[in-house]
Length: 240
Image (tube, rainbow, N blue to C red):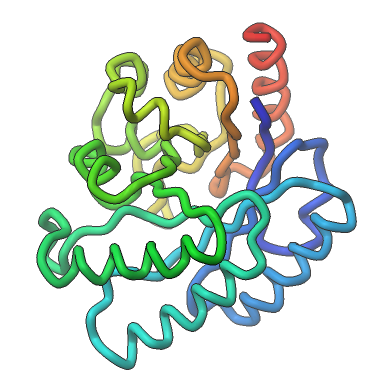
């Protein structure tokens, strides 16, 4: 088990001890690509393993100009990847299973990006149907345990009932705590607590697969990041 945390800017890379860094890139974020490149450089200088996670990019986009711009940026991001590019699952524009022209567009984008770097798919948009999505599209899986809880699903039960074919594809975990909706809209990117269900779910998961990368995606509660990393270190020692 490798573990670490998400960053957006280069100065965040060395703030805490970590095996693994996730560089998050938000579409439309001012100077986002420049921040990404500087964070990549910081990780390489520190000899730190990293993944890149673009947010706000839709691989199932079918409109010509919008798709061309999306794929141009995604190819640029992919060429800077280390371990993996983590992308989201998607639905049709009306929220149903990704099928028809949208599924074809998503699959084509995955193929093109996979020719550049490894690609892993995270549950973000439709966790209730994610096992179907993973089987349909994924060669590598990123399980976001916080999103499982936010979807109203018991994450401990979810990981215990995951079928072996999904476990075989599992590469990364996104970990953060769901604590209900708060001002600002986010409800599931809080720091861990010693007895939180998300941490317990990870513990059960590590009984099934140890060679995974665990990434803390703490946004609402950055002051708790150091304590959350300590909880992961303790869990890693317990499961060794």
